[in-house]
Image (cartoon, rainbow, N blue to C red; front, side, top):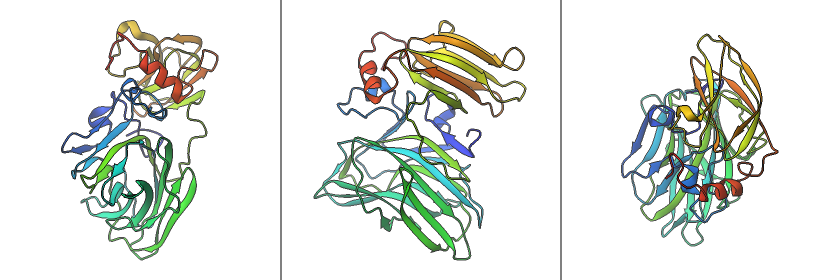
Length: 340
């Protein structure tokens, strides 16, 4: 999916269908990738992508599976790896009956579930808890319920063992909250599944997912949600709204790798009039700014395992530097290309 992680995904619309993953299951059409201007219409202050212009959304309310599957998520016997993503629970997540459902699964290549991460909602209070389980369902939960209207960093570390010494650990915002030991896995992990499975129709509301990473080392939460320095490993938005780029550089050295910067807030519209700069090995691999972007900086990477760096300035106002700024800018977008 992307370098340097074993697999990663930012859910941008420019990535290959479906959104850079191998396959999608979405009977009932409740999984989509909304633009930030659409999310801005919701009256929830944090209802914006964790980073960039798009994220994955699931609007719960039926019993169908709404998932993305990726075969690059694999763990050999006696090996350890980590799956990481950001999770947002909207204030409208409620239930009229107690419910437990999975949001991420480590599976064998043939599809058998080896370990899961999931959520539990209590109808009487609408409290949502997160937990993990050895096998097909969650068995152990964090002691504290998740707050709504905020993003969480979720990370699941798994040691696969067919000899009965496997482990499974859940981290929330970098802190271990649940750990299981002496797990016996029937086989190595050969695929990963992200999204909602086994929900009841009585559970409704919106979940957002963003910035998925799978690697053989701990990922940890990002130190900043809106950093000034970005290492780009896949095409996507560096920032949204007016801003300045101080420096851009192509870091990879493979022939044919190119990084292009566009002044746009929609990844599906890369028109000639939006083109700002191009970096490649044949010409120049870095450029000094300031480069001014009015609608947002979109970085397009092409070639084999390309990688780039973009350093932005904080001096041009609060547009992209906070969720409130993104929401305000999204609500004021009028007659722009790609408006929703």
